[in-house]
Structures are given as structure tokens and as C-alpha cells.
Length: 117
Image 1 (tube, rainbow, N blue to C red):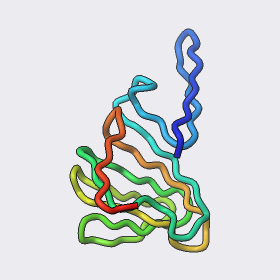
Image 2: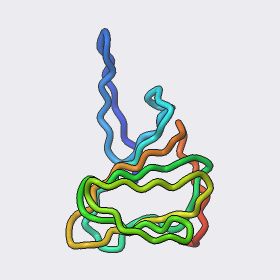
Image 3: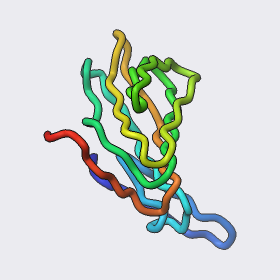
Image 4: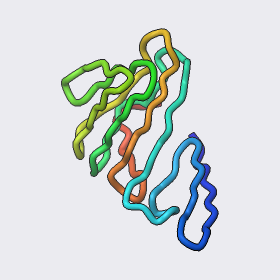
């Protein structure tokens, strides 16, 4: 995903439009966000980990998460969390579009990839 962020500052508010991902440092936040939207079955990142928590909020569809040795399916309205340094990945499962917000507890997204592409 590409990083896209634009902001407009008024006298008392900052408005930000985001598509794809945005790193918190670019908008003065302590968290970074990736917006996932795909209808491709099996789509998702390969196994990886971070030095910080990653929280996944599923808005639509279903995703199968591998969180260490545990595999779970989360559907719209459910949340999964990968603690720091836990190997994890997800894939789009089901017949609906997967829409999800992935929150990285860091102002910069830092990823250690554990599987080859």
C-alpha cells in the first residue's frame, strides 16, 4: 500500500484524509494506521512482527489471523491484537470484501519480515 496523507489546518482543528497507510510522525500522532480494503480471497501480508502492538479492527468481511501458534477468524465488529514481537499475518477469507483498520502502536511502521515474498 502506498502512503497517502493530506492535511488542512484551520484555527483550531487539523483535518486529515488518509488512503492506504499513514505514519503517525507525519501527522503528529503516536500511532500509525493502515487501511485495508480488498475483495481478493487470500490477500494479506506474509508472516512478520513488530516491536510494538498491532491492533486489527475488522469493519467488513472476515480475516483469518495467525497470531503465533494460534489461528482465529475475526469478522466485522471484532478485534484481534498482535503483542510486540509475536509473529503474525492475516488473509482475507469469506465471500465479502475485507475492510479493516490496522493500528500500529508506534509513530513509525517498522516491520521484520519472517517469510520470503
